Amino acid sequence: MSDDKSFYSTFFYIMGALAVGCVILIVLASNITSEVAEYKPEEVVVANIKPVGSVYVAGESEPEMAPTEQVAAAAAAPAASAEPRSGEVVYNTKCMSCHSTGVANAPKLGDAAAWAPRIAAGMDAMMANATNGLNAMPPKGLCMDCSNDELMAAIEHMVSNSQ
Ligand code: HEC
Image (cartoon, rainbow, N blue to C red; front, side):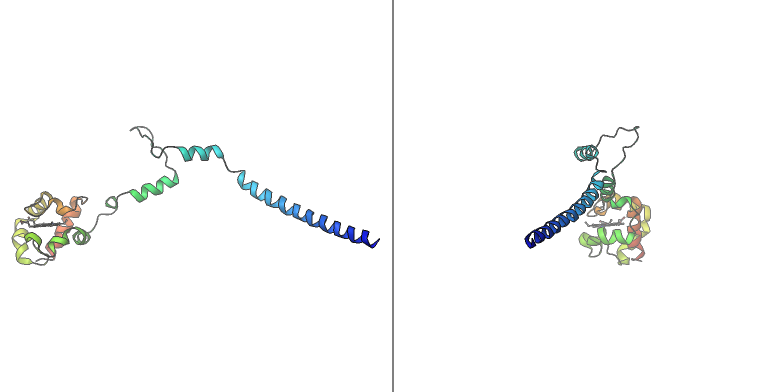
């Protein structure tokens, strides 16, 4: 008899454990499938296999960009299209290599004597020479992405520090 008793207690213990396990699995399964239900395989697959670029015909409404493409486009946008750089920044990054040391007779920043005749010729003349190049001075001082305003600001920065 005692064998029967221990058999049943063990049996119900195991059955109880299985029942609890079942409930846990059901809860887990419904949690998992509730997320899966929002998964739309076709949309995802179409988005994944679509070409990287799309043809945009002028006049048509611009294609909408996926959020990831917008991020990429923002990152790829040239810094030049942002705010114009100050004359000091342009000078420090583009012009300093020659104009701080006087390479190839470049008028040095702070060298009033070297700048005086150029200043006397006027801003327009200096701007034209800086844009087109003059002897060893390369066109635009090698700042190919400089706007006219940025180039002008860099010249003004040098001039105002060389009087
Ligand atoms: C590769 C060297 C080099 C770089 C880089 C350079 N310059 Fe020059 N620059 C020269 C030389 C050399 C001259 C003197 C030219 C001459 O009078 O024969 C000169 C002259 C000038 C003049 C005087 C022009 C005139 O009318 O007499 C200006 C203005 C000027 N540079 C602006 C700039 C600016 C702005 C930058 C940067 C965006 C720059 N340069 C970058 C070499 C350089």
